[in-house]
Length: 390
Image (cartoon, rainbow, N blue to C red; front, side, top):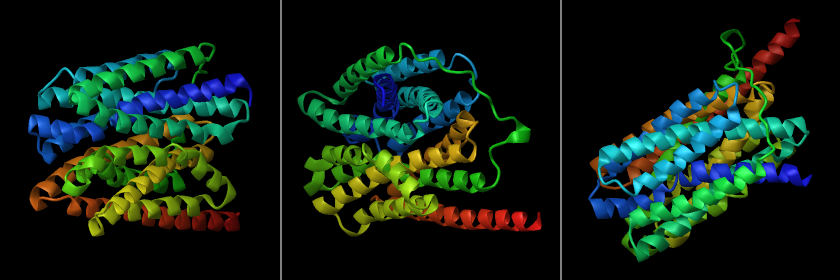
């Protein structure tokens, strides 16, 4: 691979680290410290988190309609995302936190969809599509950085300072990407109109399963650190659990993408879903340091892999409509994410522990797995019947 191609990929990795790993997921390791310092309930944390996921839906839908000046729109949104992270450290009311998480979600949705589509198109032009999965390593990188940074900063100062330090890291990443992408030019995109919608055939099942994945995974994705923090004997390891998620996430995308090209795509997707179900449910039955960290590792190594595999598979189904494919899939995913933390907060408030919320999350992801398998079987059967009638 040529040096300039590598630079483009690294830039995309850093952008996703900023928008997803820091802009979105830094709230997870900060949440227990925020709740403790400000007296927030789990329900309050769930509502604040849902603001980000609702904004993510708006951003993902809007990003799919940007056909010109994609790079400019992308740059504006990544800076807005960083600004929202910075301002989180200057506010102290639930309403303002919700608004800032909403803004972060909108800008993050733009950055995720446009970065993914831009890089996929770029790599496809140079027949380097096999490298597309590497960009999703940025999510894991940002998660690992936030998991390391937050406990260290809070130990010396407070949760607000953690947001300031994360902002500084994000700015450095953006400046590096601006340099690496200085000669990158995005091509005008084609939007799928109604008569050529991407929501046909197996894509409908893929999107529905992906939406349920969003609903299930986000409960662990929002509350994992708080879950560990709530267990007295494991409290010192709460922040480290998020680092483990990041460590699992960093290599997962290219690894899962390689498995998809080596074995049956649906079988590999199914394996990732099954492992995630196991990881989500594990802390219900065993709560020691080993099982909690294994749960974190399985979660990190599957949720990013499912993102990269689902978007990659969707683009294979519609190779000329990557922006529309990523936008549609991300929108389904985002709807699930909005609902998940709210339901989890209600369940925790009622049962006074996280077990019911985790059971709900695991069951939803298991349902996603079932729909994926049934949908593939049904779609394949219809295709065979169509060919036989010709």
